[in-house]
Image (tube, rainbow, N blue to C red):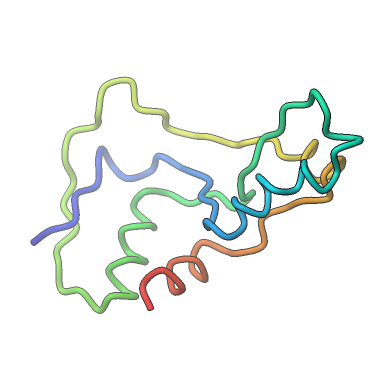
Length: 108
């Protein structure tokens, strides 16, 4: 079985570990006075490429799978950088778990 990466794998994402995300969802309840009527972005600030994700998954799982490159999807978002400054300032929330730590927790 192979690991498919779309395009050249340079598209980048911010990934948030579920425990951090749940804490972010709960945080407006804990800061109701300041959060009322507000909209917040919840995301980790670390940016990682699709190719690096594939390499990390392969490494952590000790997989012998080949990473293959397939055609880029139409209208693919190549880069995302979510502004979480409002969440940090008002909710006192920020994602703590790095991509690799979250991957390790998920896999183990």
